[in-house]
Image 1 (tube, rainbow, N blue to C red):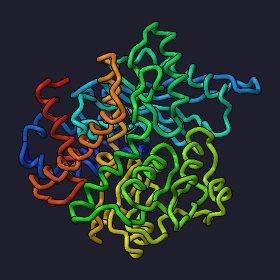
Image 2 (image 1 turned 120 degrees about the horizontal axis):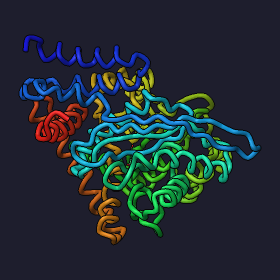
Image 3 (image 1 turned 90 degrees about the vertical axis):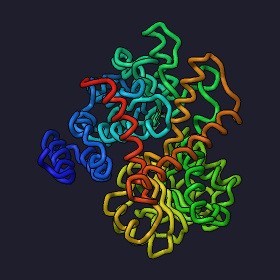
Length: 450
Ligand code: GLU
């Protein structure tokens, strides 16, 4: 091989760019992973020889389909549905479904690509996939959401199965949507199986699954601060979202003695310097997940400060935890956080920090945890739900929580060990990418050119 590893990596990134020019988020995710793989590609030439990286950036299969449905006014609506089956080297495709107007093929591919590494890091046997639709659940009635989900599953059902591909929730897909999707799958396939995770507790769901991404983020964060002999006790935290991830993160962060002072949405943010807890947290929990109401309603209810048109990254805090969506925290935000004394940033959402923000944190010595490690508790608990479904039994809350905590500690350890082994000590981004990559790459080598 003539090209240097650096040139080789650039050529893989360039090829992904020129093959699918419009898929910006996908290019961003590929670049972030590929650039951190240099030390491992240097040491293991067989990965280049067998074109492992080239194969990993190409989905095994992509399904794109029409989702026609009738709204409450009797008008026919047409959405576009997706399932990207990215990599099945270590298990069935696994990953959520996102219903949001911002969904397109590039977003689906970036999420599926990230999921491959995230799922590998959990050490559970799950490949990576992602799906969804450009459907906006906001302002839609229950009946409309049900008809949409039924139409979506009427096509998706033929591509999934408990040993093939197991979808779950993501933005815009929660307990209600999983219920409607599961009902339609069961009806068409005539099978009661663990084909989806995030199911209701009475019909195959796992305890702690709703809490898992938020709790897992808090567990990972406490491991990060512990490396500085610190705890979360007395720390001030800024977060952005107030969905499933944000609200359960607040709950666990409060348990661990921290104070969460912000939540927000695309219109602005709420600032509560006393910290969100007690009645305020109970009000907040269903605000998005069940009621799909705006963040400002929270400020109005409790007479809290509402900051219109801004992100929460302007407030003084020790820790920032973006919990909403991709690229919600940019370089300018990062500079503000650094200037305001922020020491730790962990991504509870998928790729919420832009590359400029990540570079700013690195320069300033802010400890930074990437989403694929930090938020892996959600899919890990989905993996535990799959195990319980296969065993046809359910574990107690304590049992699942202990396993989740153990998995988050192990992911943290794995990231640091891989970073150390490959000469970038303390770099969670490189550690997560390298550890996830090696696990999947070795399975791909074992299985031949497929
Ligand atoms: N959507 C979540 C994620 O980004 C969870 C996926 C799952 O449980 O399969 O990891």
